[in-house]
Amino acid sequence: MTEAFRYERGTLHCEDLAAPAIAEQTGTPCYVYSRASFLGRFRTIRDAFGPLDALIAYAVKANSNLNLLRLLADEGSGFDVVSGGELARVLDAGGDPKKTTFAGVGKTDDEIRQALTAGIRHLNVESPGELERIDRIARDRGEKARVALRVNPDVDPQTHRYITTGKAENKFGIDLQAAAELARGSGDLAGIELVGLHAHIGSQVGDPAHYVASLQKLLALRDELAGYGVAIRSLNLGGGYKISYEGSEGRPAGDYAAAIAPLLEGKGIELEIEPGRWIAGPSGVLLTRVVEVKRGGEKRFVIVDAAMNDLVRPSLYGSYHAVWPVSAEAGPPDLDGPGNKTESVAVQLSSADVVGPICETGDFLAQDRPFPDVDRGDLVAVFCAGAYGFTMASNYNSRGRPPEVLVDRDGFTVIRRRESYEDLVALERA
Ligand SMILES: *Cc1c(COP(=O)(O)O)cnc(C)c1O
Image (tube, rainbow, N blue to C red; front, top):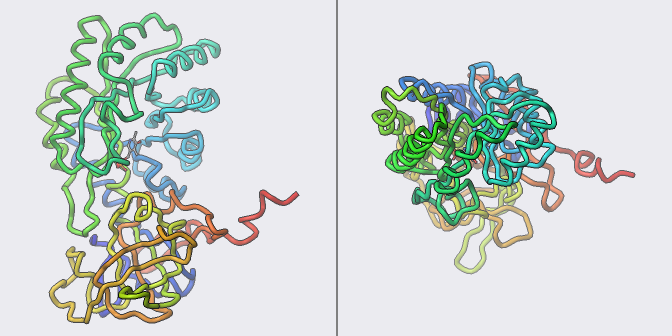
């Protein structure tokens, strides 16, 4: 639970607004974001890395709503994009291309051209073949492309295997040996200006020591390259800063900055980081309504109107999200943040699965959770859903994707309307 979402007088509030007031107007399911939380968390991580003078490049894939990108662009944030679509969003939102980097293992020629046309800060190159293509495309255009080599530092961040990206067997980046050779040869490529080294080891990385290990490898490679006359000015440590889905405050961003600071002192390095989840995750909830309650054997199923198409993380990764009725004396016992008097939850709890209406056994939001009695029509909140929620939503089962709203104190704005049936079929009409 974060400061932005609290139970007051028996009702979940986002900032100063009672959640039922939103659901009444927008219907359910609906993503609800707190402006104060989103901006506040950006400022917190920016300030934590302030002493290192780091560029904060928000990872757009965590939550790419234009209105949220605009909030960050207005704050001077940079952006980390992984597709032409994300780059277009950043430019549309007024983001600064000079603070925008482009990663991804399979950039197409068109995407490379799009990045060069936009004049982005640099492309993060993920293979020797890609470097060749960027060189050729840039030379054709009579320009030099700024690139950073994405290195695979072979660090195990001890997180879920699907969100581990910096081990030798993962598809991302270039191993250290090959990167060194590539960097040495880059001086001969007329279309390439090598400016940096990049590593992103994964997501939900709880121990700052893994970033230290990653940075040490980048620094060693930088020193080696300096010996060959290749000067590297920027190092990018990627994203992955852990949040707590159990609702405690999680790792303070300052812990990560403090751990790496001694390694950077006096080196004159431009540092870049790419947090996504850390900023967006705790800043949103998914509101949903109970459609039906039923029993199956020993099981109690709470069937809600949100499903795996709206929030796929539980189905895809087995991820944990706290789920709790919107009308309750206090927050869920598994969330222990400010404003939640866990010990005062005196209601009777029994085990339940909270599931969606989709025709897949894997369609669940929570399994075997202690949960209060709820009835048809009750509102339920899925917490910490601001990152990799809406951006991973689909139209499976011909379900329109939910609306997104942004709360500012006691009011809210719809920042994406609900998809209608016409939206679903518009591209199929002859
Ligand atoms: C996904 C991704 C990020 C963001 O990861 P979070 O866990 O959301 O902070 C940063 N950089 C790259 C290259 C990524 O692919």
